[in-house]
Length: 288
Ligand code: BLA
Image (cartoon, rainbow, N blue to C red; front, side):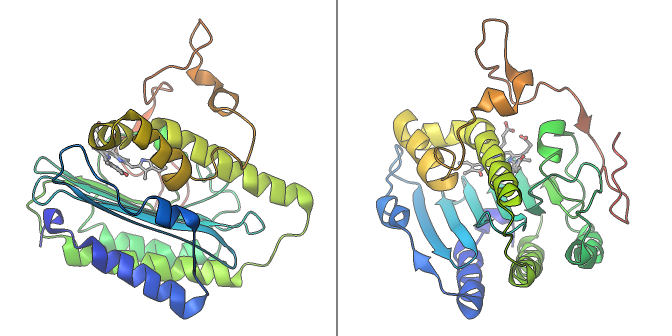
């Protein structure tokens, strides 16, 4: 099955089942609020889920089903700031022109250099990631801006939509998700207020980046109109961007300031991009 036949429900149901087996999910207000979204073209169906749980600040997913025209699954799980646990990120986009896959445990504090992030869980994921390289080879040029949020086990791939990748994607998704839950379960609560603050700020920085520059944003505006797209981005997809911290985009990413003080609209300004996987097979960063 190709990714235009993406059965998003299967992914979402697995995530909900796995979460329910391990913890207590509580629906969030935003699930009700963004339940019945209608699109401008009246043809594309959208479904959303939004929960919290002990240790989990926000588990949310949005699925856009445009039949053979477009399929999107954007599922993220954000831990509570007391836990230095990565953000689970499954982001799939398929159109007749291309399929894009990002599956990762985005480390809170970055993994451009190996630092302390190659803990046992990432080590466990390394061979799994390598095993999937056959199905999901490195997707080619990717910006520095994205890579700095990725981990050494990121699956980033871009391929022709006709390839039969559905089952491989589902099994990678299950493996990554299970290991993410193991990480969460084994993490202990941080009590030092400075560390909690740093974790919260790292999430806020991530949310600030994605809320402003996510490659899906232009399409969301087309589907929902400017104001609903903004509402969705700020209060659903990247909920927390308006209250987890007070810094603004340019405080975190000053390189985006243009001479009149406004924000550069481009998605990448650093200029560096990575054509091949910038981590070696032991997870060391080699992209310098
Ligand atoms: C493209 N989405 C992409 C690409 C990446 C991601 C890496 C391709 C490279 C690029 O254009 O930058 C995803 N990038 C990520 C993620 C992170 C990151 C997850 O840095 C995390 C840190 N995508 C969605 C939604 C839509 C969507 C909701 O999540 C549409 C409604 C669409 N993604 C989408 C489209 C493209 C894309 C249309 C192609 C954009 C283009 O080629 O200009």
